[in-house]
Structures are given as structure tokens and as C-alpha cells.
Length: 108
Image (cartoon, rainbow, N blue to C red; front, side, top):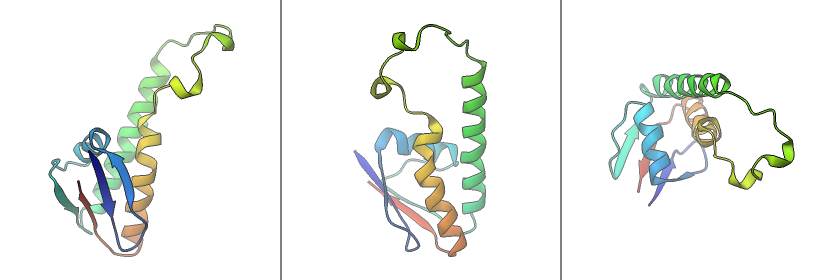
């Protein structure tokens, strides 16, 4: 399933359903077929995503690092996508929408 986040202030942001569900949950939103992040909710939603990214990065740093040969690491295409990478386009959309005083809606 594909979820589309829309705002009249920005281009659409497309996301796989599982990823959208995770980000919506972090923002305190339930994963419904359609929904809205109101203008009043945008600052808290942005803050929640940024806090989750910071916590995720901190957890990554706490993991033991392999000092093995770089050739032993998996290719970049096989490396997991971080929360920060997944959330970046949505955060940008939310920030631009807040600046333009426009809500963000989503639909699947």
C-alpha cells in the first residue's frame, strides 16, 4: 500500500504503508485510510519526529561498531534505511506547510 501526504504548500510525499504507519504513530496519529495533520498539530508533529530521529541516532551510536575491513561491510543497497532518511521528506513537507499555514492530509 502507498500512502500519499498532501499539502497545498508542497509537492506530494509518497511512502510505503508500513513506513507511513510508523511515522504517523510517532506523531501521535492513528493509521487510517485518510487523515489530517491540522495547522495547530504541525509544530508538535515536527517536534515528535525530530525527537524520534535523535533517539534513533543515539541508539545507533550506542551499538558496538565493527572495525573490520570496509570490504567486509554489506553493499550500501543492502544497508537498512534509517528513520532519519525515511522521515526527512515528510518533515520538510510539514515545515513548509507550517510556514505556509496549510494542513497536511494523507490518504492511502
